[in-house]
Length: 309
Ligand code: ARG
View 1 (cartoon, rainbow, N blue to C red):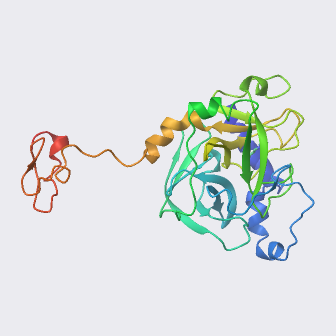
View 2: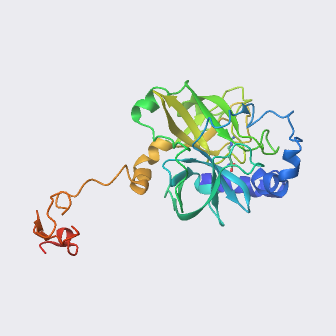
View 3: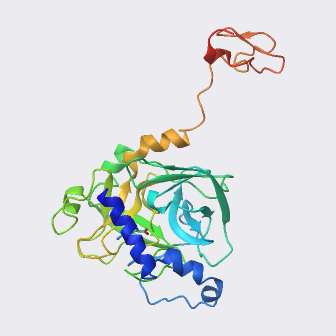
């Protein structure tokens, strides 16, 4: 409860202060600024990060609203995007394969389904058509990843087009920053979040601050590379300000939602039906389980789930 109030309040305040890049920045200030090269290069990117190498984060998407950048997200398959629940609202689209928002690169794809997690700040967006296979999805994390390369003290990375300083504005070019994972006990210390971090969240950042995700990065991916694959470790969720000392970035812990995510996106192709006509080469006859098969090898009716045909 407290959490969602905080997120919502943060967004409302940002709207009022016109500091919400997702509402004002990229939408209100399109093409001309950026194509003329007048992007402010003096600010430190994401906060304290750097330009991503074009194409190096092929899972990263921009969740769009009002025709511009609104939140981050990441492909989990060619049709499912992982983002933050607090990014939902209005008509959203997903832009895949984009590095510079002011360019025309990538594909903008509408949605056919959104699912929000009952407890966590996590949502899934289903695309109306699959993203190009050029855009490699993220892997869901395993316990091994979480207790190895994504354990407290290890370095993970976050990327997005969000504000490059607290109260600042978003970036036209995708930004990335490397931050260490912080244990929940450190993140719950009195000088940090004083008990407000839940087990289903994960913190990352430096005690001295300086590097962090920020407004407009929400929903975006916190990732780690391991054995040639890139894993989703967290989803940008909230923080007190951005990059402040002891106020680590707070992320929804992907592994805590893994079952829920898999339930929606399916974990690979459905298992073969042992009673299928095709698998049993039973066209025009009967398959195991008593099912009738027609001449083109379709089963009659729904016999195998409804009992004997
Ligand atoms: N809630 C923010 C958004 O909507 C993300 C905040 C992340 N903050 C942080 N300090 N890491 O974009």
